[in-house]
Length: 224
Image (tube, rainbow, N blue to C red; front, side, top):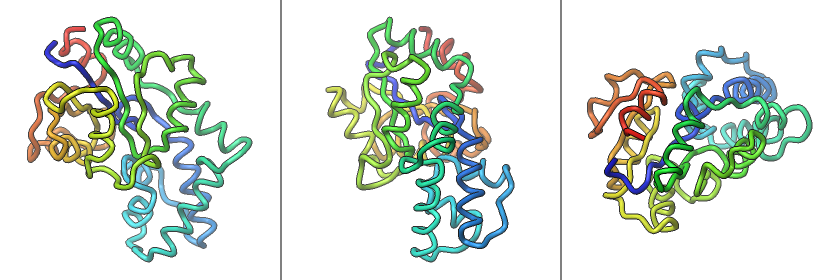
């Protein structure tokens, strides 16, 4: 393998928090007097910021309504939540088949690993800690730890700098065209992972080195 680092998006790339995210949307929409979105509608927002996801479903771009939804989500299942809602996000998130094995193999090969996600960094770290997998990651950069969300490459560049890697040394893996655009903007090679709702054809307008149907195949392709 020719990469010194392999970086990942989180939601629908390495892990699945759909039950918690869907509950956050349901409660947030209820607080705004809206009908609950369908599960499929919510699934297509995963990877977006919460504000963008709200507008994607509703067509409403009012900043105050976006902020009200964001506030409700964070206090019901997000970083401000307590009790069952927070447990649902942390304990109810599952890693996809092959995720732990891939990260373990990269660690054994001396390859640096990082997550660059729109999901809050503390949430991701707590998910991995809950599963006893924290040692599999060198770094997590969450969406709350940057000023500009993906596809702006700020988080990607931050991870490169902290791990002492050049963009040419790193493969960035993600499930959406947002991730593909992030890799392109940050100068990294890109691999699509088809664990989410984005079809393979959507990546054709971006440079990529591989499209992996799942993480087990990605591990095989990387030869680790």
